[in-house]
Each structure stands twice: as C-alpha cells, then as structure tokens.
Image (cartoon, rainbow, N blue to C red; front, top):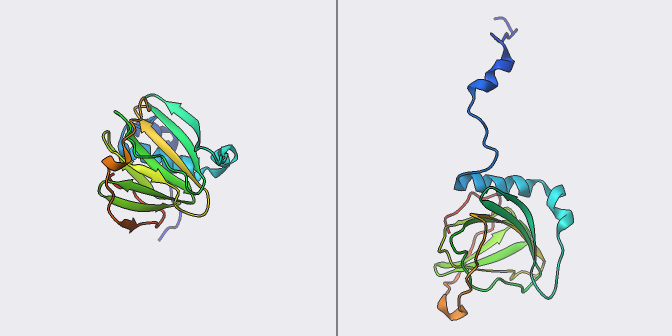
Length: 173
C-alpha cells in the first residue's frame, strides 16, 4: 500500500465551495457559542474585572448588530433581584466562581462554565450565595433596552437543584 497522499486539484480553491462563516451570530446556538468563545479567552476579559462591595460591577464588553455582551462581577451576597429582560433573549455564562439562579421553577447552582439560555419573558434572580467572588458573561439579543424589576414576593422559588458540572450545554431557561 502506498503511504503517499496526494490532493487532487488546487486545495486553495476549496474555500469558495464552503458556506461563508457568519461575521456575527444569528441563532441561539450561535450566541451561546460566542459566549463560550469569549469565556475561553481569559486574557481578554480577566484584566477588566473589578469588584465593588457596594454594588454589582458591570462592563459592556462588546456590541454587534443586534446584540450586546456584558461582563459582571459579584461579591458574596450580591444579587440582581427578580427581573426580566424585556424583549431580549439571553445567554448567561459563569466565568469564575458560582452563582445561584432562582426562577419560579426552582433554584440552580451554576459553577464556572455553566450556561443558561433564556427567552423574552423569563423572570429570574441571580445571586452569589458562595463565599468567593464570581464573574459572569451575559449576551443579550436584541441588545438590552429594559430590565423590568419584579417584586420579590411575585416569584416563589422551589428548593435548590445542584447543577455545577462544567462545561455545560445551554439549558432552556
């Protein structure tokens, strides 16, 4: 058997046969992939992180056509309060530490690498119940234009569900 391998034709001509790679995501899976790509580039986001004991720190990391990417830090005890995201869908990715997401259907511990995907109308509360700071990445599409706050008593929470394995595939939220 001959171990030499030859490629017929011009290998540089192949790219024109492939579908073009989109410059920006256009699907939920694409936005989840964008979040994972940004999360993997720790040298790009880690130097930007700040911790503030009085309020959650946040920084808009990137924008694209119809979406925004935010970097947030959470010291122990900080939380978002129950809220929605108006007409925006989103992908929440935990970069460092552990966060707890509370929804009407339950409570879920999210460790580093965990992702939650949610649609417009989703109401949740995100809290750092751990003893160490946490960092998260949030992609909103379309970009976040409103964040309606819900009264704490309007959302009843079920007991905690531990789910901290990483990496994770997106979960419906």
